[in-house]
Amino acid sequence: MIELRHIDKYFNRHTVNEVQLFNGFDLTVPDGQFVSIVGSNGSGKTTMLHIISGTIPIDGGQILVDGRDVTHLPEYKRAASIGRVHQDPSVGTVPDMTILENLSLAENKGKPFDLGRAVSRKKAGEFRDMVAEVGLGLEDKMQVPVGLLSGGQRQALTLLMATMTPIDLLLLDEHTAALDPKTAETIMQITGRIVKEKKVTTLMVTHNLRYAVEYGDRMLMMHNGTAVLDKAGEEKRNVCVPDLLKLFNEISIECGN
Image (cartoon, rainbow, N blue to C red; front, side, top):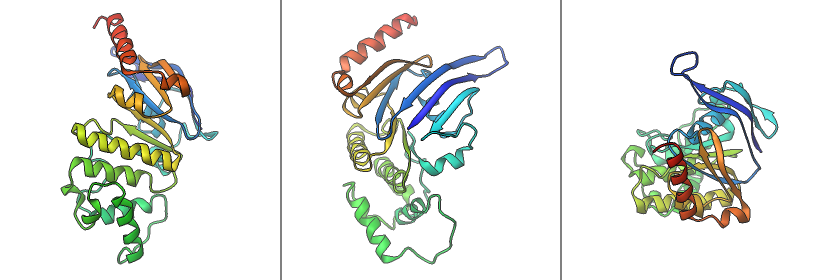
């Protein structure tokens, strides 16, 4: 379970440009829940992921993972139990290393460093079978440097790497935004399959309202650091894209846009 308790977050604090984004913000995400998060720019959705992962500090409140207070735990220590996929497909992999080498690194996440001459034939076969399930032809490119892959292939690989080891939480930050529509659909299908198979608690930030409707069992709409919409279960399944678009427009008018 992920808990954000009474979170306060300021930007440019103690300057004339001071802005408070979160003011006593609370959020509880049960184990195994897949939450899609939408909202306009500056609404707090990506900042929320940064706060949970430890990328940026908070100014007040608590962050708990399975009841353990990680508020002051540095990002690299939280990373042991958190998988994250960013918007940029080039983030999350080592471009000069091959697919096989990248997967080998990912599998050793959180383990003591060790030196070996090569990946075993058995392990290489397991990695090949793993990427073959993606359906993007990666199994025939195991010795190809990741930097030479397409954006979609690289993002699919990043997804696999982020979930290879046991994790408490998967954070997806606009992970289809930089892809063409067809490839984005493929990545979302892979995402849905991985989350379902691994039953991993997932927070997915997206600007694609259809993805927010079709994927996940809970939906949040953020605005000015608050959740103006929070639907789960049957309520979430009854939400449609026109409903979300209408709410977006209402908020936009209220803000003078």
